[in-house]
Amino acid sequence: MSLKSQLNENNIPRHIAIIMDGNGRWAKKQGSERSFGHEQGVESVRATLEAGVELGLDFITLYAFSTENWNRPIEEVQALMQLLVQAIANETPTLMKQNIKLTTIGDVDSLPDETKEKLQECKDMTSNNTGMTLVLALSYSGRWEIVDATKRIASKIKEGTLALEDIDESLFASSLNTDGIPDPELLIRTSGEYRLSNFLLWQLAYSEFYFSEVLWPDFRKQDLVDAIKDYQSRERRFGKISEQINN
Image 1 (cartoon, rainbow, N blue to C red):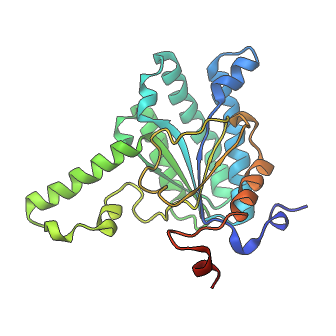
Image 2 (spheres, rainbow, N blue to C red; image 1 turned 90 degrees about the vertical axis):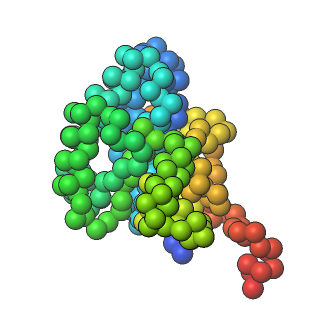
């Protein structure tokens, strides 16, 4: 049975955001170091992207490394950065084959030089791809992004290129890292945790949330389909009442 045949094809989200949680706990269950869980999580990323292409998604955003993750033990941070470099190098041919475009959000300038170089190479190589867009959130947090957007707007006001009365939701959204990317209709978090962890705080205002008990290294295509099934069972009202939506 194909993935699409399990779903209402007229109600598949354009954009799904995912908090990939549980790598460390998964590794601990295997009696291994946390880095092993991160390594195995790459297979889940691959499966999720394949499913996204099959389902015709426009965007998948993955919370890959938060600003708070810099506070983890230095050995783990270094292992994560090295894994990111290796994963990008290994997966770029697959992104090209699947017509996937790579972009990033977050304080990318804070990443190690080697990581930034590999990211830019992949972004350049995939820039003309016209299929799904993979958004990697790296050295990212929602609060950081909102403060960064505020600074950009304040700078324009100081320069005299923007008036205070020009500021509205649309202008603020265009000042965020995600300018040009539609807000996610669905957020998925794995591993049974029930929090946003400072992720896309502005963009998730009207997203549906789906919390899975599955640890990220075990997450596969069917798990994504199950999340979308749950999304399709909900009524999205955006502040209206059911009668207004149904009419």
